[in-house]
Length: 325
Image (tube, rainbow, N blue to C red; front, top):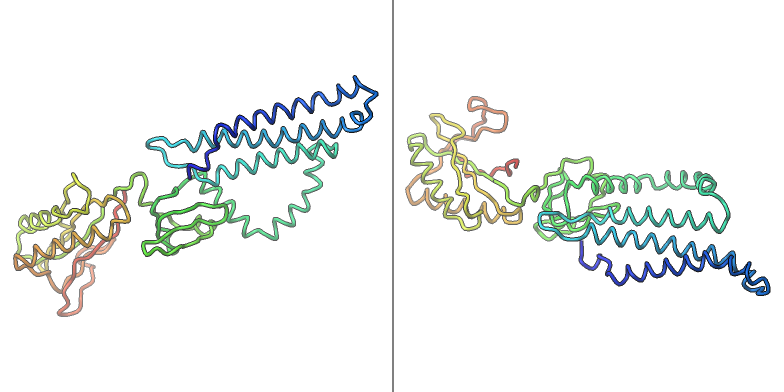
């Protein structure tokens, strides 16, 4: 949330003064009219002044309450993520609706139940006409309350898009992809998809890649070679050395998984490219070639059921999706 969205203290003090002045006019208008019956203008305008004073107090009070809530919720604290704008917008809408209904009840001399009953049919017709927009709005409210992601987070919306969250609105959420493409998604579609947040609970996460080396190369030597090569990467997180694990073992080759930490999602491709380049250079320097005629085990497969590459094919280093944190 932008710093400009936080109300200045001077504005809040002016609103408080306006409320006090409006209440003073509303409460003193009729007593003054009764005390000075000879003033015909005061007798005529006492009632409207009273209603107008209370109405101004209602709207100024709503704005003051929203301003105090905004100053409280938007105050930046270390370790706290920003509050979605949609929640403050919802609070302002509720306060404004209450002030409007209270003012209407004063001017039309009806209680709130009568006003709500008279407008029920109109609201029902409008709601049916804009039901898709209403679904987007309620989805936006649900996401604002549950907060699966915040502004500035890198997220992946299953089958829809991946990018950095720029804005969470009433009806839509806006992302910017790695290619600087501006993506606008309806909130109702986002709420029905699986969401992967690469920035929560922290920006740092672990990625990995797999490669298969010849079976005649000792596991200890291969692990040391891969670990030393990956550790030389400068883009990955400092202080967390890469890890190398054996994921599959067989006569056709031994599959290794190298794990490394990515500091934040927008550096994932750069980290992956650097790790691959360093491992490739180390293998070529030692004259080691990747094992052929072997495919890595997929999720839910063992070495016996894993598919094989075509004859003569050589399996490249395979990137894998980010691990669950």
